Each structure stands twice: as structure tokens, then as C-alpha cells.
Image 1 (cartoon, rainbow, N blue to C red):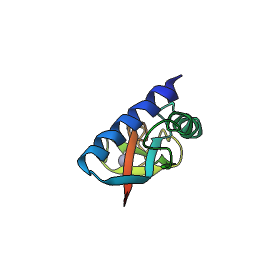
Image 2: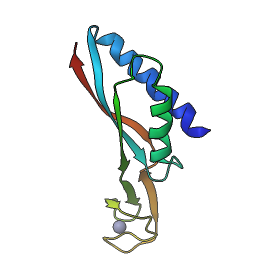
Image 3: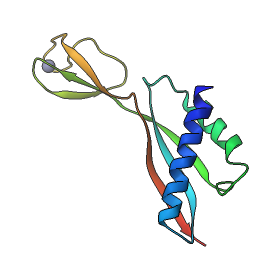
Length: 115
Ligand SMILES: [Zn+2]
């Protein structure tokens, strides 16, 4: 399952961050899941909840938010945040747009707590 391999990458990333901050724990991790990435944010969180059960992130809370979609217009060069894919630029109406964001999975921030 795609979500499980992503989840284990997220945990590896968190382990690396933890190594940089000896003596602290990770309380919370905010993830940004792009709506176009084909990743189901809820499945990802469920996969994380299963995978974290063994290990240092048992008590870590993983949260997901959806990353905004960003389109850029090749005609007027503006970037717009949109709720759904638009085929036309909302500013100039040209249909020469490309998708800039909303496809990624990012660890947005990590909240540490001292032991
Ligand atoms: Zn435009």
C-alpha cells in the first residue's frame, strides 16, 4: 500500500529530526498532503497510527492538512490558490495554466516536548 511506504518515510524523517534534538520527544507532527498527490490523508494517518505503535513515536500525534492547489497562468504569470483544478486563469481568463502545488507530501512542522 502506497500510504504505508509513505508513512514509514515520515517516521524515518521524524527519527532523523529526533537525533538532532537528543533528550526531546516528538509530541506532534503536522503533515501537509497535497490533494492531487493521490494520497489519502486519512489512510496515511491510519497507517502512521499502526506503524508508530512499536517505537519512539507511540505517543506522537500525527495530523494531516490538505495542501492547497496552486495554478500558474503562463499568460499573465500570476499564481492562484484554487479549491479545485481550474482550466482557466481566474484573473485573465486564459486557459494556459499549469499546476504548481498541491501534489506534495510534506512534513509541515514538528512539535517537540522536552522529557
Ligand atoms: Zn492569467
